[in-house]
Length: 275
Image 1: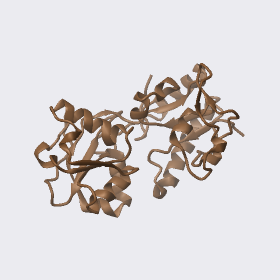
Image 2: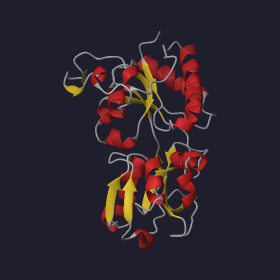
Image 3: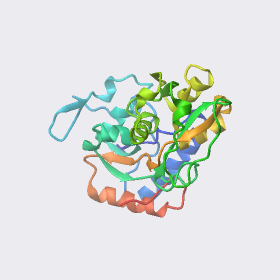
Image 4: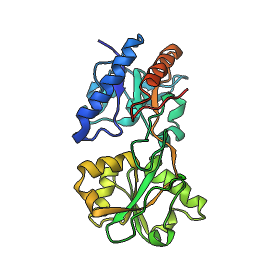
């Protein structure tokens, strides 16, 4: 039994867990074909993470996270997952990476977003959604540039998934700044806890606008009834989507083997060649 950890938590909605499990099974099998001791299943709970007595430490021995065994067992703390020394393969976001995570992990590859409106290869963008009837619906710009309806969104209440989210708040912030504006264009800002929650918050009238990454929006159109009550009124610029990462201590030969395996899966919608 493998002692390594894998997880694909970023788009792991309850309705698609079978699809996510199948995605991992495909990755696991090609990894194993290249001699990698990939775990049979992905983790979804803190209680499934191997204990790290004394806590998780960085390259200099500094404590950077508690022992996962001390965390609530039925929840999954993404940041502790990403920092786990046994991490073989997982998704993260470039927001946390820019905020310090990149010092503790290695990038294995990037997924492809070709299957989604607003995506192109390893690039993705966020749909700006408002309640139906409050603005004209727009398509994703072919050139991948930001499409911000400044007059429409001025003075509106903005909701976002989390402060470290590239798609939910960092990308909109940067695109607004490029247009000579800032988050102050909104009358208020509040954190919803997730893209799905942001859609519900807007649909229920507790906020007016949110930025939803294009794959989460595709999931919402399939499974979230509140998505039928909102419309896309703008888009952020395309930028790199969620990277696949591994632990800082993963050997280079293992990373090389995983990258070679991903090349073989490059025709699948979720996988993009890197390296």
